[in-house]
Amino acid sequence: MAGDVPAPGDPETHTHHLHLTEPGSDLWRERLTFRDTLRSDPALIAQYQQLKYDLRPPGRRRGLTPWSRSGSFGYASCPVYRAVRQTCSVIATVPATVERLLTADVAREIARAYGDRPIYPGQIVIDGPARTRKFPGWPGPVLVLAEENQGACSWGVPLDGDQDRSQVLVGGDLCATVTYAGSVGDFITARRWDYQCVNADFCVAARAAVLDETSLGYLQARCTPSVTTEGWPGLRQYRFEHQDVRVLLWSDTDQCDWLISAASEASLQEFIAGLLSLPSLRAARWAGQA
Image 1: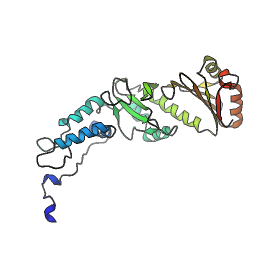
Image 2: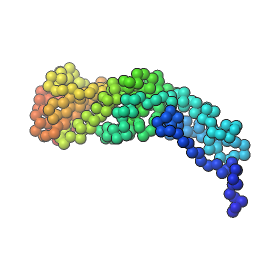
Image 3: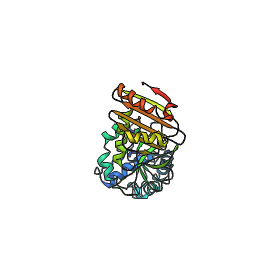
Image 4: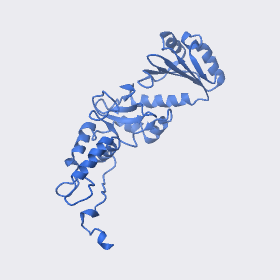
């Protein structure tokens, strides 16, 4: 049995690596982003795995990592790593507004609105032009913030613009990449607003014809507008408030979905009675409690 155990110094005794970096440093971000980028791209994982095998030292059965001729680990000598750095900008600093506003607790909180999957800050995933894009058509790298609950789209912050402003993009297979919100603060506000709307004690939904100027003008004249977003679901999302009533519109090219909620059944019914003066709402398909 003793003969089956590699002797000290034998290459086969090397099974793991331990990397020590200062939390928050550029090297720390670089290593984490490299890890998360691999985890998010099966094709890149396969390339990296093959590279490790190809670069194993002579006589070594295991290909744990790319080694330089000196026997030390060298990220700089790894073509896959260089490609990740180039295409995904792994050394880019996360915008200060994102770090300050989108903490782990906030990310989990706003994901509750629709059951989306938070990515940042649990992972640092950078979507880049040379990969299968989460944000198709966007010319530069994007820090992924969250993914829609069924994977239809993702939200992220571009890393090639004004990082003090940090607009939030939305893009995916089912929607073109557009600016969802003008800032990270607006993104958070919109998701919190939606959670309160869809989880109210009393709510109804209606599927109506395309949003017309008459219906929009009715709401603008009687309600206080909140954050407007674009891109998913539909082309544009309007939010209005009137006392304890919230109105969320998902406006698209062929229809508009209305969600109306309130703290009391009486105020909800009163508000809906006014909406029924609008032709598009009289002809809508309704579902809910009122």
